[in-house]
Length: 423
Image (cartoon, rainbow, N blue to C red; front, top):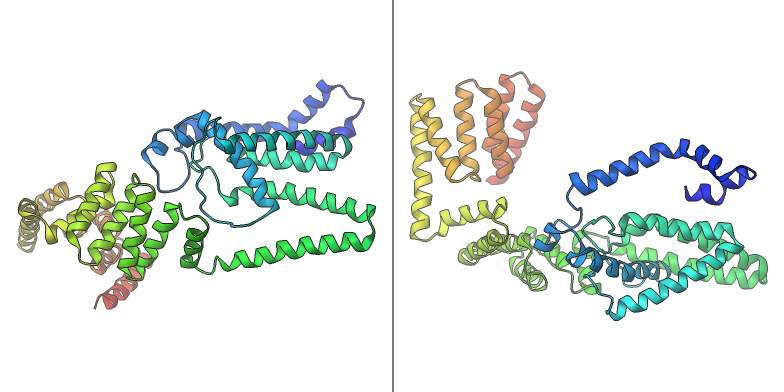
């Protein structure tokens, strides 16, 4: 539509504005319907998209700072910062913190002045060059989807400038073209060479930051030490590398920056648990559940901890679960399958995140030749405990029983690999 406004409509000179609009609507109808569908699903069908980690405020409102007004002031700062990054790509980072702002913030006032100057210059440029005017308008139009008019859960991300940067590059080419034809060729060539060298070098240097995840998040912490996301993600990597002390330090720093993100308490709890500090692990899982009571990973992890290191009452609860499992197994071995199912159902009711109970119940369903329910239970067990080779083996048997040999073979191979790794 922006392109039509600048160029295609010039081919229809002499026609009335109403007729031009009528002609264009034939082309725009499909586009406008798609836009309307996007707005409907974004506003009423889908939750705001953004970081996986969310505070309570982001979950309930979606707007930065909790209001549309704060979002608007924040985005005034953000749009100026975006174009600053395009001009001078210094200290690039995948996670930059922008909080809700007010009209009295110095950054908002300064950015508003810059934005007004840019708009005035753009209007003047537009009078002398339609191509430059198109490039500038393209930048702003393609910025609208990430402007948080409809909340997207994040104020700033460099990737949001992929489309606007096309307009920026077009504008740069047009400016350099004029420079080349209006200045001595050697001066223009020198300026163009310096610009190309600067941006090429910056691109190469930035690419080294993406060597691996650890390098990326470590570099992000250097450029943005207030990013809880960077500390949390590096902590996850440390956990995978079994460097639990470093992992705990990173999760702790992330929690200090933003103490209401439940995933980070769960992540630190896992690191504490794997390092043997069960009491601290249980405290973190409880804190995660305090923030978000229906957060399943923390609840499952807490149940595992309680089975190992729980208090007296908690141990009684764990023993109760173990008692149902034992009775269920005894009944299954005696062929009393319905009674065995009742015992496993009680375990699942008490601890719905306990993988072994689904695996055992799946075996009973298989013995009753109810393979669909058996496969469903084995799949649930695998989702809760991806390293459980017995669940894969049992599901393989169920797949064979219903003639799904390709899936059976795949599960057999996975079971063998996991079994070897567990030794």
